Picture 1 (cartoon, helix red, strand yellow):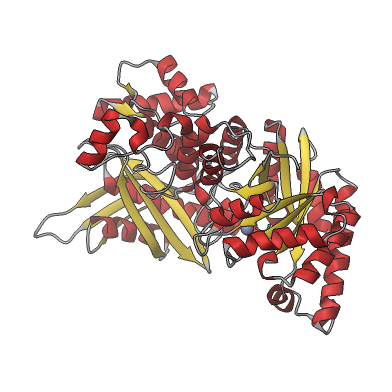
Picture 2 (tube, helix red, strand yellow; picture 1 turned 180 degrees about the vertical axis):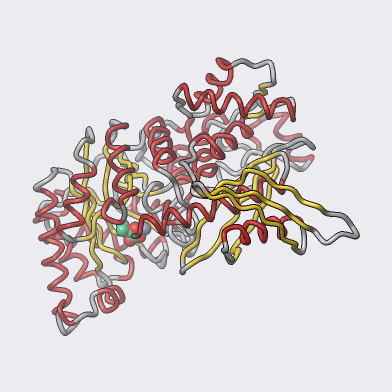
Length: 514
Ligand code: KIV
Ligand code: ZN
């Protein structure tokens, strides 16, 4: 068996399904380019039939990168045709179609009697639909992946039958998702082993795994599956994805890399691009990486106790199983200042993974000089924050043009805002429990909105008193979450920008649905 593991990155599809994460087309293209630098084998760029914005993003990415671009499609003609259309310009293309396999999914999603009256009848219908879908997908491209949702909780005989039928129909990759993150590593490994034993034509397809992290086992399950013979891992940067997320790419890749002494399979990932990818995804999605996250967390290479520091000074191997450089974490901080010119800024941004047009460079250069005036030393994380804040932004419906807040120990916090929405301009004042609440209330007054704030986070982008403050706000409306991010040396301004951006994301999603 080939010892190379195919890395199928689904940051832009499953990852984007993380609550509150929403990426615009520009951000998706930037991430796709960074994934290409990482040397992933397949980029799952989206679910084209789900919205015009998804279609557009998959289409744009297909024209930008030369690695395989996959598009997701349910086992339905319209989905498959739309996916094929979105990836038609890709250098290498894959259609990824899926259906359900567990009894829970069949009885829930295929409960309607038109799929059959009994479980057995419904199972037959699903096999037929899946075979038809794979055959139809093969009329558009030779690379077709078939996934059976909730395979982790599926009866092994039925699962094997479904796999055999879809390979016979032309599927070249068979994906066995642990959709609910339910299985244990030994159990999941055993499912893969049994599939290899039971399915007669299994040698005609690559076995892929797609693990969710509900029990914190997504990476362990993916590794167990490789041990059992799978050769494609579906994963995301920073492990983002539905609910508790997917297997984290950096953890899977570095486990294989660091423990080459123990495991014989390897990936083609350029590990030195991992840190840039992690920062970019976190910046664009607004999903913060926990400090103790393996490989990419801020503390992943920090040695705090005296004993550890002493050991490190004597020999780095004492407490370090990989070097920060291996995953692209810079050992020394590069600092730019107000005297750094456009060229210096452009070169630094390119080193961080961003490709800028001249117009974008003009915009970020002006923001950079403003920031350098305020805080003198501008770090990589400041630049990443600016990139995520304004540069990739699409034109917004509502814009905050001015704001003012009055606070004091004996004053009721009062905010005034000027918000422009297309040609309309509103100036409203409101009070609140604190200055941020007052600004949110004033924005609500201007837009006649009243959103439930699901989460609010503020963090300092770098250390020091003049550091940029980055605020992430998640609002909830109509059963869906929308997040916004704002950056400023003033956290009230950053909060107002973040809240308004979350509202703009919500407006955009509403428009796309129409
Ligand atoms: O988790 C899952 O089952 C999925 C499939 C669409 C592959 O994301
Ligand atoms: Zn998934």
